[in-house]
Image (tube, one colour):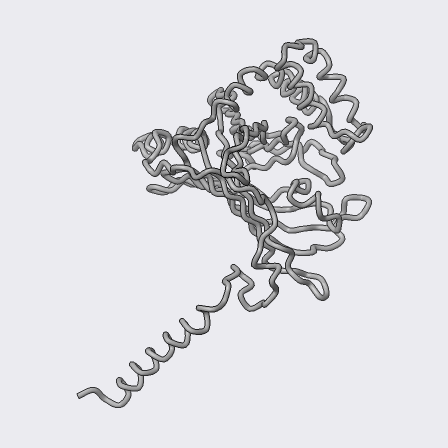
Length: 365
């Protein structure tokens, strides 16, 4: 016969699970903030449009299978992990503040958005790899039909092995060159992230870690400008300071962020940290999506963007510091270059001659 203790224990466990299911069944779960009753946390801001359903490609990609090959060097594994980010994806972007450091702090509204984009190879020089992201998004209209595709040349990521020279963000749209010794960067890859107009955003370096079936790269903490999801609605902090983790999966890859929202003084010194946030961008391979508009755009404008990249490369290599104006005559640099690229696409090749002077007109120093 069961002891009284065993009967009590079974009854307690049963009551516990019943209570747990009742207490959470009628509660909207909010990651990290389930104890708060604020309605704003339950409805994220961000993309409000709805896209067509997509078909996930759950088969391991060829790049993933190449990454699993035995007997290759760590350097070659690094390269294959970077190249495994190539492909055609549905992406979800999620950001949530996890803690605050000011009086009467309340977490900001979470952010969620989505996109369909492909990542294409720009250059592969063995110890240097450049990947370009291109958005091709269809939205569902009120009558159920699909919109024309929205094509946007998105961000770019360059990877360089044992990179000794990085252009680091200093706040207030300023970058400064910093050089590292051979020992500091041994075995590492730098990741340089560029904005949609190919201007610098941030750079950091880190080591790829390869386990039996897992490959991840963790970058050093780096400063970066406010992302578009923030600077359009926030003016209470000046810089994000955070680290990135990139992990390759059989069907895509995941980009994790751990960021601090920081206020600077006029000399770019840290005054205070407002909050910390976590971010997750999940790239899942899809099939059957119509990428033709994006691939046509990239083919038609590639030569224009080659010249833009070349000028930025020369400018950053020759300059110890760089400061850019956010706008000129009410127009941002990315809007100006995108308009020029459109004219080039229509056949106006003279736009290439205007690239250098157009970028220079936004330089403050």
